[in-house]
Image (cartoon, rainbow, N blue to C red):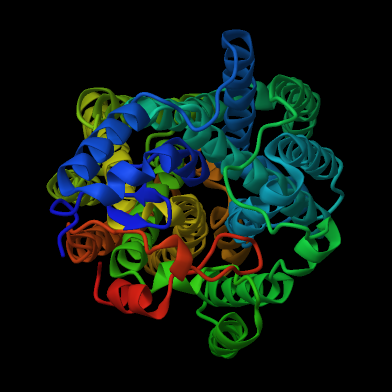
Length: 594
């Protein structure tokens, strides 16, 4: 039963097929209700109706707003995404100063991991809340949380308070990212959806690029506390702007349970599952991100993972990770592929500025500029793929594999060229190519996921994919950072032992683990030892990232190219959030990769 061989499936009074507008099944069914006699009266009439419906859906968005509202929504969303991204990348150039002020050199990798864990774990909850309270209310709340987190972070007297502030900002960021995708899916036509997803990614990219540069440049003048504080009023303004730009009638595009109160809907959110999911991730990442691998937290994470799976399968009315979607081979493997690929990508975003500071001796502001070419490539790759190729619904299996394979190859080159002698233009060109490949890959894999999954699950499938991308940042920063720190610490200790002894240098080693800016203050043999240690750390880091990325190419290939087909409306069982779960026959088909 191939995805390209089936135009649609008749159910109830309407037609559902893989090319129906995302999240717009209610509208699609309403439009074809009047054609019931034709659809059931003959085969040719049904085919004509399907063809006309597909053409109409290609050029019509699920929900529409005026041009002025559309412009204001675009600007406000771009502003929030930009602030969120710059908040993340700014850490890479301010990390040394923050670690020094808070005396948290060994815990520096958690500056980013805390934010990303909160963001990724709260994304599914944000999607549920957007359905209950409407996207306009939720995105304003998300902007306020992001602002509060910035204030708490800026005033933090110690590491604990700093990380609490980062977690609050991450919760707000979850709402920002999730609702941004809701707006794109609801307000754009299928033909233009690819380019708008690319533009949304470009907003994130610009924030990542300029955040590292601007924060690094302003750090000596205003300090890191002012940089976090300054983002708060800007986020509130953007949140207010988008709140008043979205009509009150705007919805997330999902069905609600008729007659259900807000209290009953809130009660069905899987809070317990979210708690155990976050606990599992924190324990697992803590065990692998430490200078020495901690076995007890890793073992505890396995226990909490088992409890989480039990809750999702046996207790939760509305699981935080939808079981029905994960029974699809395409959806499950797409998410795993995104997790590994983006974890590898985040090592580039986090550690190329560190490379520039430690080995090249660049200032924090200059080091941030190393992200400009890779993020420029990311934006161009995503926009180009969406504008020139992704203009249809259907399989993008081969383009996904090709772009991922090229991305993996660039990581191999990073592992070999991250040395003091590599020409700067060559290194920047490599960064540009890396961004081009991953930017196009993310657009292709998202389009392919929409082909693999039934239209009725597109909203939750894209939300789940976003969640795994968020997890990837946590895994890339924590696990990759932990591996880097372990290699760096070992190389520093061995290098100093061979050159004058380690005694008296223990404090220097501790500080170097979280402050690459200290390298520029060293001279002679000490500097040579430290540069060599950092170089070996980068080689191991990006070689490992390349291995993971190549494995993810195989995982992506296993998703297949056969499209998903919706089950009949009459066969669907309602669940807590009204998304619906297909019947047992459909679930068995999903398990076989349909």
